[in-house]
Image 1 (cartoon, one colour):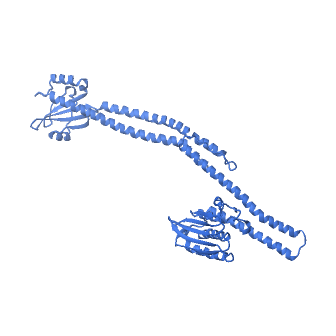
Image 2 (image 1 turned 180 degrees about the vertical axis):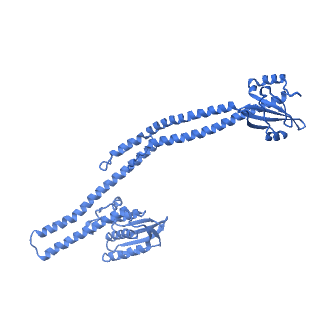
Image 3 (image 1 turned 135 degrees about the vertical axis):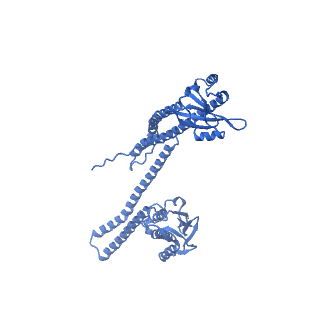
Length: 471
């Protein structure tokens, strides 16, 4: 059984459908409200006309004892009401609700006095209602004529057919049924054209982005200069491309530096072995070659381990973060530092510590602190000192590693965190480092949501500060 996968709708189509659907809903609601308002307005006009006719009949017509309307009164009504009078009808009732006379043209159609209208008339209250009379909807007004003493003298009933009003409402509905779909269709066409015009710059951006590859990140998406959302999108894409360009450049530089760092010990190792193989040598000379080769192998192992650690630190912690108490961790790092500084003449101490907990990986944080401490011991001359401190401020834990070493020039403080960077005075291969210690420490701190900064003055010393968010 084959499943046919339909392609997803384009944004242009979805915008047109959404626009058309919302417009249809709005027009339907507006049409329903306008129909209700028109119906209410027509009914109000009919009711006002009925009240006016009832008042004229009350003031003009009086039935005689035989129950026949005076022809002169009928002529007066015809003159006052015009031809529309013939579309209306009335009858006169006594206070008990019995007919005393009715209009001559509707003798075959007797009006009805409902119980509610009879009860309201006895109270002197008029009643408006809609009745069905010979398949004709009639709007009927029961109008009591009240004497000065408060008693009901007679009851006037006036009606008018609602056929015209209902026909007008039907025509209005038919008009809405035709115009609303037509309006939605025209709006959909216009919406599609507008969406196409609005999304044309997005298509151009997509074509430009498809032309950009990893080998050619120098191209940028053109801005329209309007300052609208599309320009902001172009700025965002250009910023992303700039970051990618910098990242790829850093990766290429990192690969070149790593290859250079690996080539140096490999070249030394190869050269030593070749020299040893050129002629027969004594066991002591072979031993010296092997010792030198082992040193280069150790250097390669340290470099490989540091590269692996830097890669893991940049990718993020492998284990879920857990609460880490920094005070015991700092004391453990200090104990290791004391052993490292045993033969260097550098003194270590802790100034201030406060208990605090941060979320993270304890092993990774321990490595970051140890790298900073090793760096401080390595570049502090004999007789100098290294101080550690731990405090809190602004919901952050601040770990400081300060030394009285050779210091770093201000223009070099941003470069020392780059991989394989060794400054002329302070970062040489003779120290045994790989140039990755500070890079690893900074990567670990960044992954933990913190920052690593340095303050240094040549000949005075350096102060590295780690800021980590508290748990």
